[in-house]
Image (cartoon, rainbow, N blue to C red; front, side):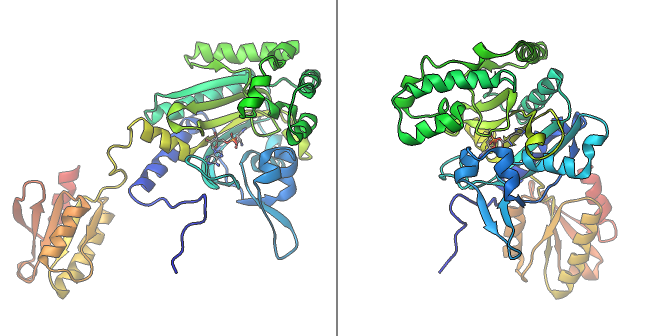
Length: 420
Ligand code: HAM
């Protein structure tokens, strides 16, 4: 019997795996340039952290968590997202007692038991950034801009930004009540009716056409905002416009996590099919209190690395598959003694900063030269018994097939010169 990766998961193998590394780096680069520090949190946390932080009524908590009891009887959950963990870590280490906002970024695996399809996986990767402890529209605008810059840095041109506001604890209750009243009068099935009472905003996000058709006249949050939320949102929009970040207002944008207040946003790409969100985030002014901390108004985002790769593929940005470290020099030893000498030479080349590989498994000249060609190396170093006796090595340029004999003592410097 042979094993397969579990459903909804997959392996990244070369050369695409190199792309994934580069994407993670590029998405995080703008945040790092803006003073965000790196944070790493455990892959599993107390189940209650997510239940309280992300929200009991969300799909994530009610249906999608990988929850297990460990041998000590604790209920643990593989993280479905990073924000709750980051807030937990900030509180645990008292980072919020220093300068505010606390700016952090992370990169890691997330786990959600979702229906697997293209762009929707059970194990996926996010790069995220969070700014905690500050209520300032410039911070919302900064984060949105950093995400937009991350996509732009990868050459993506088809990412669209949608923004909305969800109000605050002052104005949200009034809106929620108005929405509930509207929804209760509709013809909906039982699970949806139950949702009206727990999380009415999520009903707006119901994708079924028969539900969408009835939602045409639903009250919109923008019509129920308090003065402070209106001013705040206008300032975020105006800062984005002033910085040249294009966006569209989407009054229907509802996020799948319960902690959001005020600014919410999503980055979408049209080349991905139904799973079009390549990233998303927003403000979460109440999350710290929800998990037992002090008031810590915060904002952040998470960008989906896997979907960003699909978006790049859709835009034809991955045509040149050979990314990453390309082998520059390839050693071809002929015979036992040459193999020992070549092993040292290749080590020396690597220590000198070159990307070097060699033929393994005692291959003959023909097989080893094939390996050199396949490696993509520019130069092969052929070392036979006669070369050893002459303390020399044959340096072959694989693009021109030109071959020259060079002294073993000089070959590292010669090659360093060729690649400098
Ligand atoms: P989210 O919208 O649940 O937000 O996830 C962010 C991004 O992760 C999505 O836009 C998508 O690109 C990617 N993603 C989510 N689920 C999957 C999946 N099953 N397969 C592949 N990619 C996926 C959050 O997670 C929030 N923590 C973001 C945030 C940070 N809000 C404030 N701070």
